[in-house]
Length: 349
Image (cartoon, rainbow, N blue to C red; front, side):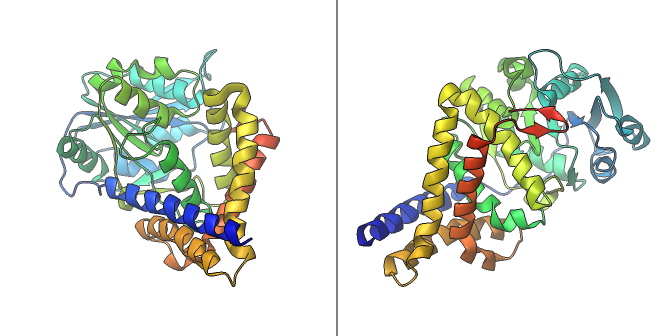
């Protein structure tokens, strides 16, 4: 166990140091505001309860036109959207070969007129009235064709599970754009329309369930500049308020993403990653008297603390970082061994 403890400490320190350093590449959203012509597209399936929190912050923003795409809802989503002054496009569901959300956003873009920017916002997000102007200002200041930010939430998953998930995201899609994929989060993505069209639009990503990272990567690979910014103080999301909601939300993204990236190797890779992360989290806990275990524990807590600090949640939760990593391992095993993710009554994995 002595050598294992040393390896655990070194791996934790190296990994956590890299994650913490990646946060240096995440600027805060601009304090300035730039008015521009923006089409805001909100894909919505059975979101009558969430739209009253989102639309007041979008409808009426200078230069912003809001289109809600009602994706075969059964709860009056369209009527709620119209009552807040949004335009509505009604859909009977995705066409063959399309993922549901991607198809809905595609329909929204089809309604574009002469807007310079496209904004894609999840229906379960709440935003401040200055969000769009500050995102445009960030894009101008950073020389970016796409800017994206995640929101913040209040449930237990946000201070326990998501800090570890953030490290996994940064490893696959680092915010400096130098990874195999570029980083964006579907909560909120602003993209220059010309760059979006040059990258092939949603048609190029029709069947993907990793639409956010897929769009940022296609923008990068077609010569554009994607940037991830921290606008979490302007955004909240209710989509992962409960631990179960978070688990299901991450699962419907990770399962199809691995399948799309690795094909028949997806399941064995998820099993291997799950077992490694269970061990990664538990090793510091199993040898509490070892100084190497304390070093590993501390190293895993550092990026955990940075994540919760940025979203305004208790920093003391960082002490649970090894348990969060072990739970993340269980999550990856669940993705591997229980195929068939569902979201909004649709199979996505």
